[in-house]
Image (cartoon, rainbow, N blue to C red; front, side, top):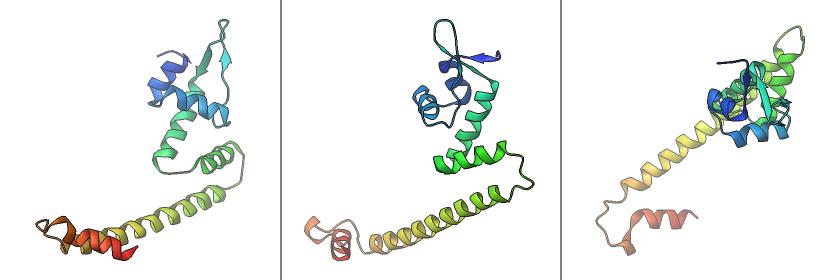
Amino acid sequence: MGDQFSIGALAKEVGVKVVTIRYYEQIGILPSPERTEGNYRSYNRSHAERLRFVRRCRELGFLLEQIRDLLRLSSENAETCQDVCAIADRHLDSVESKLADLKRLASELRRIRVSCSGKRPMAECRIIQAISSSS
């Protein structure tokens, strides 16, 4: 593994699609690389590290704007990481709220599912009736 990557090699190295790399460049998440004499993109290790960071943030559900803020904060010489913690706390609150919504949804689906044996004619399906009466 060398110090320079083509866009395809970078995509393979980090586990993202080429189109994703181009998009991240376009929106400023990933800095534009140098170009070869043939005008091909030439990425280096710092691009790979940054792209890994972005990929991990996406896996954790961070929005692109939050990732942009985390990248900006990580490059500043702030005295503390309080602002990073604040972003993480807001994201955690959002994740926990979504989990609570999903638990309520699962409970409602369980309640509806219990009412149906799967042996009634479609016209008498309790699940369809329950969904119809809830809307």
